[in-house]
Image 1 (cartoon, helix red, strand yellow):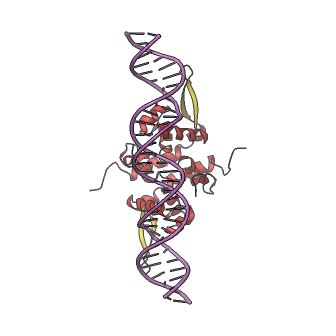
Image 2 (tube, rainbow over the protein chains, first blue to last red):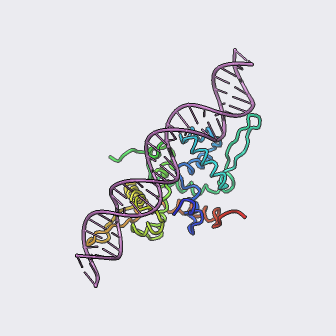
Image 3 (cartoon, rainbow over the protein chains, first blue to last red):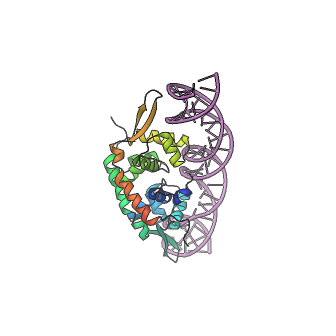
Length: 111
Length: 111
DNA sequence: ACGCTCCGTTCAGAAAAGGAACCTAAACCC
DNA sequence: GGGTTTAGGTTCCTTTTCTGAACGGAGCGT
């Protein structure tokens, strides 16, 4: 199965993964829920390379999860905000958060 | 940020992603919920390369999401079943499913 | 003995990610 | 008006990861 084929899979989980099933993509969406919206904010928050960040933002916009808006016209700057589709991702994010909170305590190793 | 560093991130979503935030890992877990448990079953279902499948199963076992059990001792065969930690992932999976169902209809392109 | 099933492992080539430097365009600073 | 800073990318090269396909081992049927 190729990555792109996921988007037409019979399983809705697989189709969801075709958009957010990436190392960084879901964390970008999380950051959006936490109020971040700008390239530099994501980059500092995630320490992801600018290269990858630009790519993932573009994909999220193409997928309709984020919207790219000019928040300043004089220096012409863009930011990224959640669409309805993106905001609707909240329950899934909460599910992941709850699981992480319960089953992934912050410790390096057992012992 | 490195992949491994996610497991000690302050954010529980990030810590969750350190385990299941991979192309295939979450789909393997989904298959487990759908009753699959054997290497060949996962491989046929996901069309993932055997190499990667073996690696992801090992990680899931190490993370305590799956358990590796011998289901046959004479030819000595193993399968993988959800632990409590793994079963507890159900709500997150449902969240992803709902979002995929609502926002990722099965069509190639918008018309 | 030969092939089949099942669970992997190994290897070469392709794709993706990482890291750092560079670019544009305007603003701000003196 | 020249140098620096801010913001949002892009480009390049190296390293890591993934893919595809073949191989291995251990039992089982015939």
